[in-house]
Figure 1 (tube, rainbow, N blue to C red):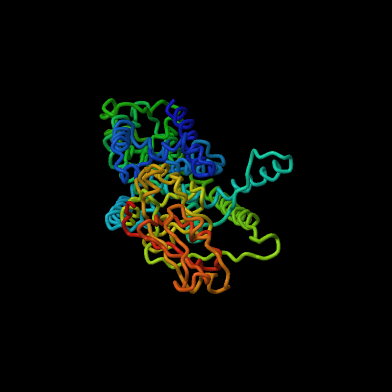
Figure 2 (figure 1 turned 90 degrees about the vertical axis):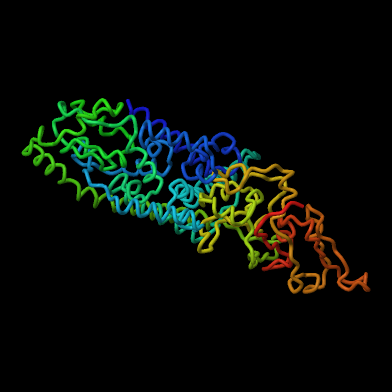
Length: 520
């Protein structure tokens, strides 16, 4: 019964969170955005007391059921592990292994130090929910968007606008490579050892493992019924069941129910731990059947090597195919920008900003990078293509703003609505319109008014805050060239001027960020 309840719940959570990262219409977060806020570390960083208390109580009562149902990376590992060919070993392919306590808690200590020290790139690299978000948004979403664009072309040929074409581009090559490497590492570990990643590397799994040692409901042995057949140990993807000594390592058990399902003698039950406390401490000598165990262990180990070798080749082929398909889809969807079909428009390049831009609602750069886990949800949801992963060493994979492909529209608050970690606080449209995240700076040598001798004024026309005014370059010559003058006290740093500036490859006007946001 435990397994029959867990699998549908895990499937629903997994599919909905995947949809949340794939969606580009803004619909998904209205219905399933709360699932992102249920993730453990984002809830802690956002100081979401209700969710934190709920997850702690859930673990203390039921064990690490969070890892089997709510965590998308955990469910993904179960899916990959289930694809492994079992050969003739119908009972399972795993075996008990002692806890690698030195490794899992060493990683946890480094993880906590990174959070305190503000090393966001290390935190983002290990946080499981964020790792899954990067995998979906960087590897799976290009395929998703390609399918949408194919449907859009078909619909357009039939005079229908049920679908619309969206651009596909890699926002950060380092993040793309890290997402592919993460998928490879997690997949190989899941293919070979089930929940190895969860119980050796994942810091959230280590924290919940500490709590689950005292969980009320546990998987426990009924020694009188146990026949030491090892079926439970071979079915346990967490490798935490020592059938010889009738012990279960509750810090690693993810309450999947596979062991109970495989036991043919009813020797395993999931109930209040006190019922079987005495049985759990019974030594193996009381019920040992040495010769039978040796025979079973020998038989169960024979098909393993061959299955792993075949599985490794097929898995590598799958991963390489996925990466090539994503890259091919991205290249195929990239179109050269032309003006009227005659002259090619050179792509813009991002300027060197002394201070990075962070979204309205983040309060300050320090607050933003201390809370952000680099899950890429705001990046995938940004309809203006302003957000993209940073390439800085300490802020790698955490979002930054740039205006080559769009600008931060004052009426859009999408990123503040979807952020689960409190890095971007919810704000209203009115609050955003008066939040100054930076100020515009004019670069005289790039302005086409001076380089090409033409009149422009794009920056003035498109400024929503009215912070730019065109004035004569030489005050005494009112019939001469007019250039932009910027009122920094009114500028909100939205980037409309930078985006609409026709100068290439660098805009003649760009936005310099502010460490701390202001109200204007």
